[in-house]
Image (cartoon, rainbow, N blue to C red; front, side, top):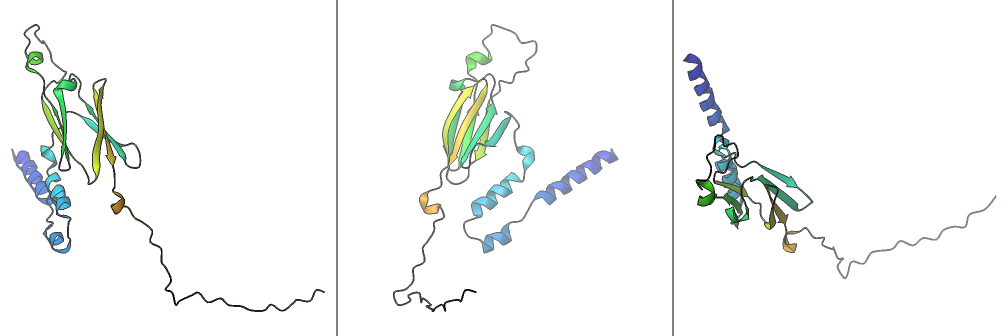
Length: 177
């Protein structure tokens, strides 16, 4: 009983220590409020669902791929929606597949439960394509930075009156010994 209370106290101290106050940063930065809100909301990791499992990989300099294991789902039962920097993937089994009454499961280890998974997308990241193959849903993403946002080189021109001065000197002929 005493050990259970100690574990509970340790857990509550850890939860308290995980919270970071971003209010001083709000006063000295402009335009980063979305980032701070994202970090603040992500600090609660215990509420993140673990189904279905997924990978996020970088496939190129500006390309990414999310791969989700969605065994038992077909294209009609999956939906993807990208809106306001959030990619939402939903899977819902049709009623006829859930309770068709033709068979009785003695053990059901393949999960066919409905799910909803959300991914925060960075600015200028767009979904390019999605495909389902061998129970894996592949979502290809592209970070397309507009030309106005890319760094550009600016030439420095000299003013009309400031021409470069050239130093001229005569070289004395050298004697060959």
